[in-house]
Amino acid sequence: MSPSHAPDGRFTNPVIPGFHPDPSVCRVGDDYYLACSSFEYFPGVPLFHSRDLVHWRQIGNVLDRPGQLRLPIGMPSSGGIYAPTLRHHDGRFWLIVTNCSEGGGNLIVTATDPAGPWSDPVWAPGVPGIDPDLAWDEDGTCWCTVAGVAQVRLDPSTGRTYGTPHRLWSGAPGAKAPEAPHLYRIGDHWYLLIAEGGTERGHGVSIARGPAPTGPFEPCPANPILTHRGTDHPVQNTGHADLVQAPDGSWWMVLLGVRPGGGTPGWHVLGRETFLAPVTWVDGWPVVGEVSLEAPAPGWPLLPGADEEGRDDFDAAELRPYWISPRDRPAEHYGLRERPGWLTLRARGGSLDEPDVVFAGRRQQHLSCRARTLVDAAAGRGGLAVRLDERHHYEIEASATEVRVLARVGSLSTVVAARPHCADPAVVLRVEITEPPAPHGPRTGPDVVSFGVEGPDGTFTALATLDGRYLSTEVAGGFTGRVIGVYAAEGTVHVDWFAYEPLTP
Ligand code: 6LW
Image 1 (cartoon, rainbow, N blue to C red):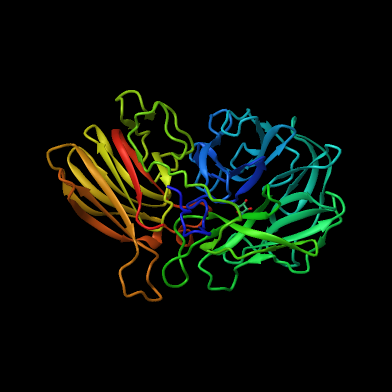
Image 2: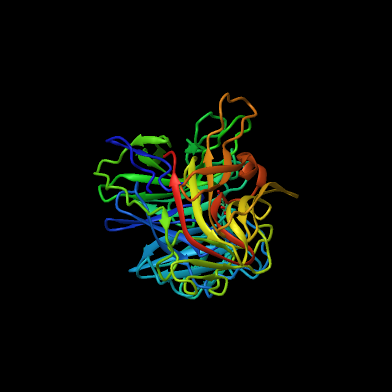
């Protein structure tokens, strides 16, 4: 389900739609690899592969075993895994990332095959902050640079740091949140790329250069080299970038951005997504081309989109890499064996209001889409949910006796609709997310979310239609985006299949 089919000579952004923030990219030969943040979800750090920078396919998750990713019981959303840096050095892939939750810190994992397995983590307690970057200088010394912006010498194979962290450069005077540093040797200079202004509408990208990885750094006179702050551009919050050079010598930037919808102030519901922009060099400084929803394609043939299947029949031995769950996914709560061809969800005492709910979902990647699932809740209660976090979610759920639609917004929870269950306890639940009906005004929301059931002949009966703004980052806060999936709130719920279908690009 690649987003990037556009007329010849152009590609569509975002190149990785949906909640895929803080992209970090590297190239090895003709292959590009990209990693993103994952926060409270397990498995963590989705990893993508591309041959053309435009079409990306998820090949795994870097932190896919409990030994690599431990998130505390009851941890609220938007804790956990923040902002990785992915690099290839000395024949190996290196990934450094912060686990922001209690008992966490900065960790380093390595792999020879980026599809995995990745190593157990090496912890680096001396790294003084979040958003860690790894860069090696000519003599093999490794520098770790973090938000702030500060730097320390690091042995990435042991996690040991040497010397006292020193300040490098903090972007524009007075600008908030200098973060997301990445350090590169390009030509005669060392370049320090950072984000500043915060990850909201003020976000931007700035750069400085110096003679050595340790500086001193001179800011680019054209800073910020990228920002959409104060514009009416459809892509907002542009920042947190990484640079990569293609085999033909051209340069590219991956970055995060959002697509706010509706009237004022604009609500983004898919989280922060990964965009691609061309980069040229003028007087030794990078100049970022337009970050547009449709942009001129790179000068090489684009490969056909690796269409991902939108439907899962749960026939495989393991869940596909796009399935994510809050905190962890133990086999006793997420079973693929007890009823072959079905995903069996066993509740652990919590509804969707709990951070540790038994929920398996995929990111909503399209502004309009439909998700359908066949659930058998004869021995429990559960169904199909659109989850922003544990305090912001809408769902349609079945039990042995009833189908109902529920909404939780902040501290308000309500049953929106209910109807008795008809004979068969296995029922097809459906959610459809579409543009709000016209006319649009300053108070129009970003989308509408309709829930209902399908009859045996496929006819759809809507039970409730809700304003989507309450499942947006502007309402809920935090760093994530919508995830659509199946859950068990009580007892055991069996899921025969789950189908996700885009209704717009
Ligand atoms: C991340 C920071 C940021 O640590 O958001 O947009 C934070 N940039 O660099 C969480 O993703």
